[in-house]
Length: 140
Image (spheres, helix red, strand yellow):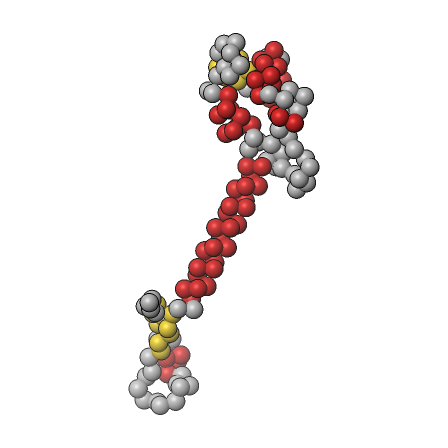
């Protein structure tokens, strides 16, 4: 796996989530300064194996039984917060669309024909509803 894929798809989204903008967990802001230096250190520690000695060497293996991986405790991640925010935005957009479409409907109520009053209760006593909502056509 290319190191950029490991970093962008797995490491960055798995960072702990914090509402503070000052809490940055990033290789560039660490003692390693470079991703390759971080990966070399992880390889020396037995966490992963790189394919060769190049600075941008692909990751060959990650050892899931390593003590640091086993001891890892789950936390609220940046990925989870992004997914929650995206879901919330999609839900709000759906609700706004439904509200806009609700305003564009016409409700037609069928009268029983025996009464001229708008307060006819014949349909209520029969137990059937006669109100039907139709969408209005879009006008240019």
